[in-house]
Image (cartoon, rainbow, N blue to C red):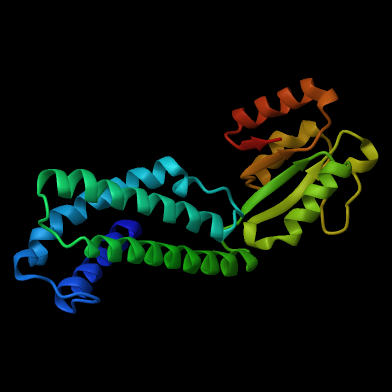
Amino acid sequence: VTDVILINLAFFVAYWLRYELQWFAAVDAAYYVTYLAIIPVSITLTLLLLGIYKLSGVYNQPRGAPWFDEVYRLITGTATGIVLVVFVIVFFFRPFFFSRLVFFYAGVLVTAFLATSRLVKRIVLNNLRKKGIGVDRLLIVGAGEVGRTVMRNIVAKPELGYQISGFVDDDPEKGGTNIGRFKALGNTANIPRRVKELSIDEVIITLPWMYHRKIVSIIAQCERENVRARL
């Protein structure tokens, strides 16, 4: 919804810069159009860009992905949408009806507006997550070196929005001994109960592949409890 608003706002500002302020070049009277006449193009561009962004992965960014990666996808997606609108829609159906500069302005402004909105969103989410707001509660399966590494990395990056509720391990010593701030919650047989008690959102399995049968069993337990499981 925010993208729809910002894309159309960017197109309106582009129209204002080109037709009202006439930046960089005067608009010939034969090319002058009202904003009402250009609204269908703005709507078409909006729908096209939403589809392109979806296909290019803008709306499926992995948690923790760099902002610059998202901006790059926005730049390439916006450029593709502008080119399609200019050469397929405008020139094919209504040749030379609009000033071409308005589309250049629109492309730059759409990218700038959407990139800025995502930067603001990241800043807000990072601040909230550092305060423990809006985080996902994790249960770690396995307290070996891989499990410990996962726990350390998660703690080192609070902006990712994860909170470790504890870990389980079938080794009696590991499963019953806390690791610093990380709480030992027994063995893997306790997973269903711990998931309910601690309102776990996601289970991270860090067991070696030699325990593939155990891994499959844990994934099945998570599915029964309607909780995500990741390896």
